[in-house]
Image (cartoon, rainbow, N blue to C red; front, side, top):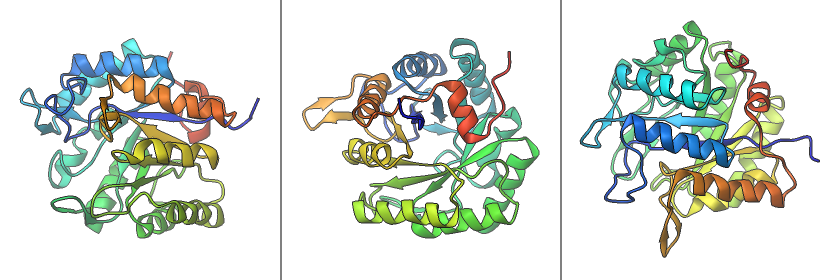
Length: 279
């Protein structure tokens, strides 16, 4: 068997998809916990989490994050919990209001870029503050790179000692007006990581129909990958995805195709330099 297990991250909810788009999108904390549990059974070892208000609008309420963290720890003990500090859920330092809860990981975007209808603003002072909060609370960031400059900035910040933990970069491809899912660009990203941060693990996520494509590129190239209803709500043009678990299972099938075992919780924590699960 391969000695290169593949981490599968499940992005369960996000800030944009609604039940009108796909009834399987989990909105309430209880729905998120149930959906996460099924995704874990399908192979996910990281849960990438946003929280929502009852009307499905994005929230950055630390109490909602606390309830979700408690539920995940109870029902998915050992899973890596990763909170989003993304910009749709709040403005400024509000985006990091849940970091004192000390999740295992948190997403961190280190530069700005265009999104479908707006600019995703990540000014240097906010990035520095979020990184310092993650350092204070012992949280490993997952760098969400929407552009080559974000990869290079993350590597520079890690070398400068301002990013805590092991460097972990995720290539996000397929967001409208940002970096498309382009295989030549993906290959260059991989080579950039290998040349400039050879010890750092990396992963990749594709948005919409690019999800399965980028899953396969990442798994085949020896990286890790992300799937879930935040990024993509369909199995194909004709069918909605019935669950987060279905999208993770699809990625797990690709791991089998490329003879890579799906990473366990313990293997994921080891690869990413995270503390063993409590208990």
